[in-house]
Image 1 (cartoon, one colour):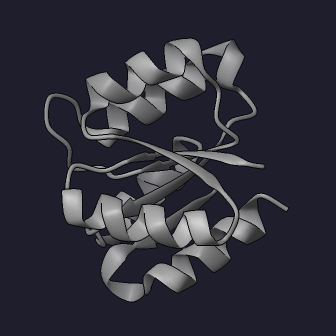
Image 2: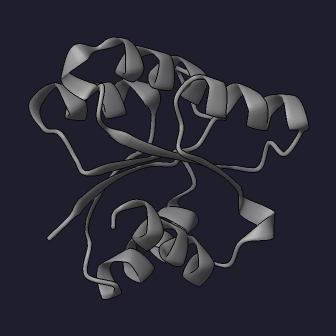
Length: 121
């Protein structure tokens, strides 16, 4: 079973995405802040990191940069799932190492799961 760490600060979205991903056969754990995400990653390495950008304590950009600079996580797949939809943000996310940049408003939770399946094939 593939494991996913969902980094998202909205409890409703955590619930919705976790349920959808769980039904699709993924083991989902969540972190509500950047610090919580980094603490989780010290002990475990998920198959996929789904990362929001606007988070308390630490932006998703910092998490992505930290993860991609750590040799332990060079091959960690990352999908950014954010409401930041400006072209600059999308380009920055991909440049920093994310495989995909999904704008929340443009994808239903089911479509997000389809994107996850594509990345984890």
